[in-house]
Image 1 (spheres, rainbow, N blue to C red):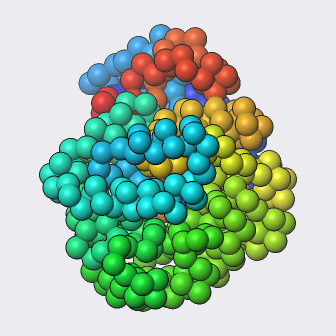
Image 2 (image 1 turned 135 degrees about the vertical axis):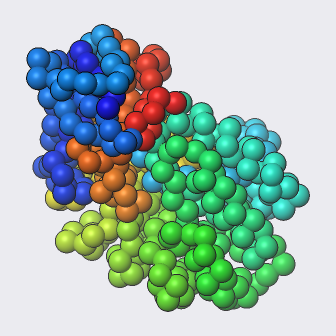
Length: 404
Ligand code: NIG
Ligand code: FE
């Protein structure tokens, strides 16, 4: 047993069996001050107030008043990509929109061309650098999408890289087949949708989920319906890109197919809120993209007011969110979406774990869950993390009970 003692406070304590937070629950988190926490076999074994700690620990770590919180869960990333798109960054600074850059053959197709020329080993190496940076910044679970292959061979190359990452890191990694990210070069729209649907049995050997960029200029609700139907036949649950560029109907089709999450939602009407009410789908907002692209932030407060849960994720990708810093995502949640620090904490931990289907094993401080937590330097409180949003706060990240 490993014991952490003299913890200033533990935040993010959630009772066993609570898999997500919705509505008013978003404002609640369990807190224990002046505490110990025990780890056994990589799992949280228990916690309690100082003075009641168990005897016989093999290793004792003195937190010196530091805070313990769950590691971040990043339920939406595109971190397997080659190189960067810094040339487009200049186009963007000069005033071109995301859509204009894409229409000129930049954007996703640009990354797809680069990925095609990059070896699997090199792709893995580049992606691993990103994953290690994310883990060092406190991320303990992440979802990674394909979607820069855009033909069967290169999509499978991406899915193999994601599998290799999963096998190489202590974080929990989930894999999503996003063949329908853009129409691959050399295909008509119709041919490509059929190709993605036909790829499903092979993709399902690697992927946990299926995703479609259901948005203006990319894939329609009908395309999405077809692809999700093919995914369901292979046991793949959907996670959907919807309402980033326009009100797309993607939320409705996602909910109809029992999506685990519908993501982006920068442009949302009351109809989307209504269809999400009573569903098992987690609305997931990506404030890093809103920040980088200068588009609206999701209406998180209204969603919560309507009784819904909200998750926040990074969308780490070279075109719309070149950062996987979940502390910054949390800060944007507070500063730009006006979530309270506790609401933002729930959005970047338990609810984003739910959006990957793993909130039974991580995403909170709960006995029996993986010991995935951040130990902060002394003197830190939950509020200071998004408030002083760039000051280093992490003393050590523990994944599966081991310090990184
Ligand atoms: O989530 N919206 C679609 N996909 C990404 C952007 C990918 C890219 O530009 O490379 C996103 O924002
Ligand atoms: Fe995305």
